[in-house]
Length: 167
Image (cartoon, rainbow, N blue to C red; front, side):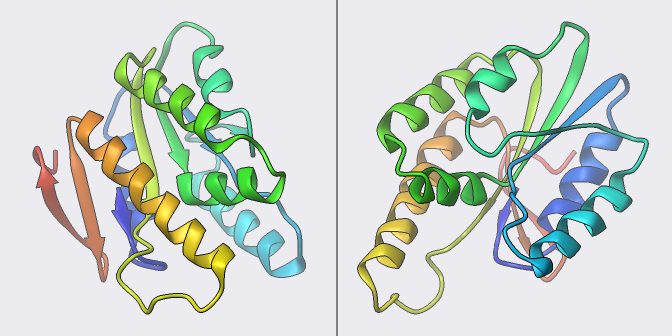
């Protein structure tokens, strides 16, 4: 699922994951650095309460996916652009982490549902770090879209199938 902020990505991805039988994992990448983010995280947790096993993983995403217990049918990862921002914040080697993720997506242990932001539709950021983030997110999303069986763009809560079907 890809889209802008507040486009309905997470809600749609959660509903899509609920349509699958079996064990569902929710891999959350956000960290609560401030009160506003704490409220966002709590709202997300309440919305999916009891329907997903939640694992919080801000950095070691690929490792966490590959180490999931057997019997997991669906893993929803929300959000890859937040994860990318975490990697930049902690000054991790982006290439290594991204290549690891691409390998996992090529041969996943279960169905993966990836949520990411489309950051390139707005104005060009004025500072270098923001431009770097926008560029890296765009390249990551392009690569993941090639690997994915399905790509769904959310605009104003409306899903549009860019690749594959909606169901």
